[in-house]
Length: 127
Image 1 (cartoon, helix red, strand yellow):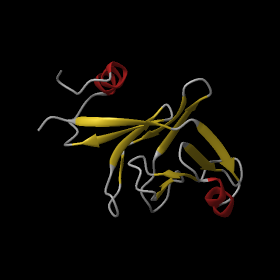
Image 2 (image 1 turned 90 degrees about the vertical axis):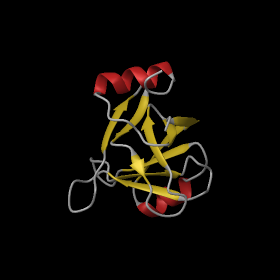
Image 3 (image 1 turned 45 degrees about the vertical axis):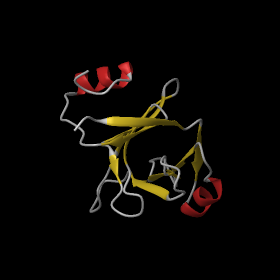
Image 4 (image 1 turned 30 degrees about the vertical axis):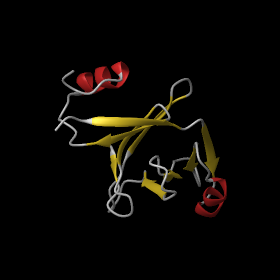
C-alpha cells in the first residue's frame, strides 16, 4: 500500500495558563500550548482532518503516553512521535514546524535522516 498524505498548516501558537483558558482559545489554525508554570503541560488543537475534535497531547512524563515537544521560534512547533487518535475520526498525523501531515496508509519505518528528507521533499517514501 502506498502512503499518501494531506498537509494542514497551523498559523498561530498561543500560550494558555490552564485547560479552561486553552479551551477558550481553540479555533482552526491555532495550536494552544498549556503552560501553568515553566514547563509545558499539554498541547491542544483542533484535529487537522477537519472533524472538529479537540486533540489534547500530553507533554508531562508520567503514567500516560507522553510526546516530546520541540520549538524553534523561526520554524515553529514539532511533536514526536506521530499522533494516532484511537477514537472519533481515528486520524494519524505528524506535527512538524506548525504543519500537520495527515497520513493515509501504513507509515514505513524511517531513520530520522530519511524522515527529514521525506518531509522536506513533500513526496511519499520510496519515490
